[in-house]
Each structure stands twice: as structure tokens, then as C-alpha cells.
Image (cartoon, rainbow, N blue to C red; front, side, top):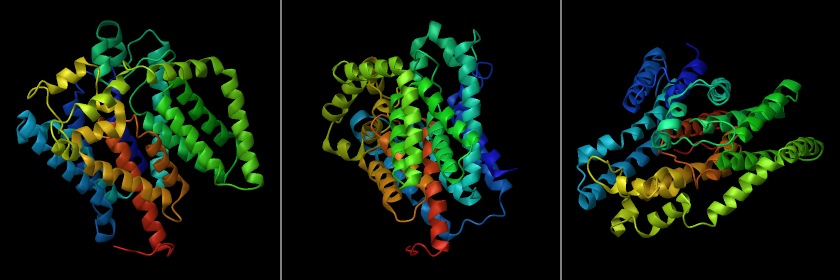
Amino acid sequence: MKKSVYIFVLLLFSVNLWNLNFLSSFLTPDIQLALILLWLAFGILVYRKNHFNAEWERYARPVLFILLGVFLSFIPARVYYGQGLMTSAIAARKMYILAVLPCLLYIRPGMKDIKHACYWFSYCYLVVTLLDSLTPWDVTATKANWGSDPVSARHAYIEKPDFVHRLDGMEFLGMAFIFSLNDLSHKRDTSRFLNTFALLAFMFLIQNRTILLASAIVFVFFILQYKGRKQLLWIGFGLFLAVFIALTWEQWAGLFQETQEQLGSDDYNRVAAVTYFVTEACSSWWCYILGNGFLSAKATSHMQDMMELGIYNSDVGFIGLWNQFGIIPIIVLFYCVFRALFQKNICFTVRANALFILACSATHAYFGLVNTVVWLCLFLYMYAFDDMYLIRKGLKEDKK
């Protein structure tokens, strides 16, 4: 099996095949978790000729520190909310998807494998989104729930914009966009230009403000990599995008107005969530340090009370992560991102993905969804892959 195909299937499992309607009764969250873990074991079996040596082993350390933070958060959950350690271990089971990183370090796909997987994922995302949005068929279970049970759809972290239904996995569209920019910088032809523009236009149609902002920041960063005539060329490309924005200004204005109104309102769920997590959610200083833990609705009413107030950890990015698992995962996450941003000779693809993650940090649920855990693992692996390349080429001092 090609490693690109292996990664592509992993991405599909991470979004639970977008809850396709004819599979939704079978693909429960627990089945999804089992499928991913089995797929990781299958990958180790298929690529068993590889060796997980000390050179690659050290890049798995972020996972160990993040899991340390997760396990320590079980203590406040037990002390202050009466949730048993076993219940906490089961409630936080999505975090075990962090096993993706050591598995990738064992299999060691190339950058091209990840790029092709992200491209294929983007094409499938486009097809499913258009079928779900423009046809009368209930292609995904989420669309079927909108008419009768919008609460279920909200709990699936899916929102319904004006144009198209938003599906899980928008982060991988961002990765594909970064790969397309990198491809375009090496060879400027019509097909690559259209691929880049199509990805950006599609993300605009989805109208996720965080993803759009992150993509814009990455594009400006991309232009700043060049000087002289090449920079003028990319500025021209930027002007082309400006024309596109001008032609669709009514939609952009609507997004800006909605954002301004929401941020200025105390009733906006993200504003309410930040206020709650900072001022009310922690029972003691230990909770500020170690987090409250991933609380189960079966063990405590705390999560249900938050949901009734419209407050979700997943809505406020690293603040929600800090509330659940404390400061250790936050420190690890930002250390990895800033290391990739500022380390000398790291390639554009890795640096741009670090910038993309940083731009999403205020609103994105890094460990709230399976696909975002896989997204972070892919980024950490890409850093490891490029760092090992620099070491072997003698462009970086190998410090263990």
C-alpha cells in the first residue's frame, strides 16, 4: 500500500467519513476510535520493516508530555467533581489518538505522501459538501438532523452557514492550501495556480472565519518569503485575490458585521465561554494549573450545565484546552509551534503550518475533535521529518 493512501484513509477515519447518512448508525464515536487505532496497528504491521530508533523516538516526546497533563487533570476531576479515575480515563479517550504521532514516526511517510493525501481529502470534501448543500438528499446525518434535531447537529460541532454545510476536517483544507502554495512557488503553471485559487475560493464558500483568517496570514507570510521580481509576481496574485474579494464583498461585509456584533455582545457564546472559564470554572488554584479534567456527563452535571448555557470547551481554543487539561499541554503545544516558526532552515510548509495553527489557537478545538488531534500529529511529524532532513544534510547541529 502506498503511504499516501494510508494517510488519506487515516484522514477519512478522523472525520468519521463525515457521518455519511447510510453509515451513521454504524459509525458511532467509539467505533471511529476503534477504527483509527486498528488502522494505526495495521500500518505498523504493513510497514514492519521500518525501525523505530532513537533518532526518531525523541520526536514523540511532545505526546508523552501532553498525556502527562491529561493524566494529571484526572486528580482535580476526582477531588473537586467526584469523578473516578477510570471514568476520567474513558472520558478522555479521544486523547489516545495522539498515538498517531509515534505511528507516523515508525511508518515515516514523505512530505509528498502527506501532500497527496491532503489533496485527495480536499477533493472528497468538496464533493460531499456540494452534494450535501445543493441537492435534496440527506448525504450526511448532520444535514438530516438540522430539520428535526439541531441540538444533535450542534453537538457534532457542525454549523450551518448561508452557502454550504460545514463538515469536519477544514484544517486539512488549510494544509492542502499550504502545500499548493509551496508547489506554486516551485513551478508556476496554470493548473497549480487554479488549484491554489480553487482551495481558497472553496474555503471562502465555507465561510469559517478562523480558517479564512489563518489562510490570509499564511498567504502574506508566503509573499514575504520572496524579494524583487518574484515578490511582485505574488503581489500580483494577491491583487487578483483582491478582485475576487471585491466581487464577493457583500458576503465579506456580512462576515465582518456578524463578527463585530458577536464580539461586542456579552451573549455571544465564545465571549460567555471565555468569561466563564477564566472567572468561574475553576474550583481552586489547582484547577487553574492542572485543569478540571474531561468531565463525563454520566459522573457529574457540570458539563450538562455548561451546555445549557451554550458554553463549550471546543469554542475557545487553547482556553478550553487549558480549562480541561491544565497548563502542561498548552506549554507543549506552543513550544512546538514556536520552535517550528523560528528554527533556522525549516521548510516553508512546516513553518506555514505552525503559523496556521497559531492563527487558529483562539477558537479551534485542538483536542476537542479526533480530526484536530490527527491534524496536530501530522504537523509534529512534518516538523520531525524536516528536522531529520536538516540533521542528515548537516544544516543543523544534532542536539539530543
